[in-house]
Length: 131
Image (cartoon, rainbow, N blue to C red):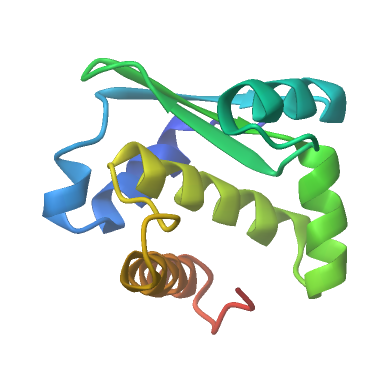
């Protein structure tokens, strides 16, 4: 078993201060089965399918990143990425959402979000990511 907190702390340190300052003090990572992911995706996003990652900010003290490993594994294979890369990407993605940046709001926000994800992932993996 590997420790999540050092990974979360590492990603937190890579985020711009304007975003990292908005993150909850503690961030948990929860793994979901596809049926659990689909249920939550329907309740909170009105989408009737399992999703790779969801994030919930419960205030300044705690937030959660919920990841569905089965979906992530499938997406990694389709993209030609390793599962480690894809899981890390989902943690980065969830943390950016927890910092109150949302790619769904506009094309500008989507571009900023994708650029930030790519920058962080390329620093972690020391290579150009396939995002």
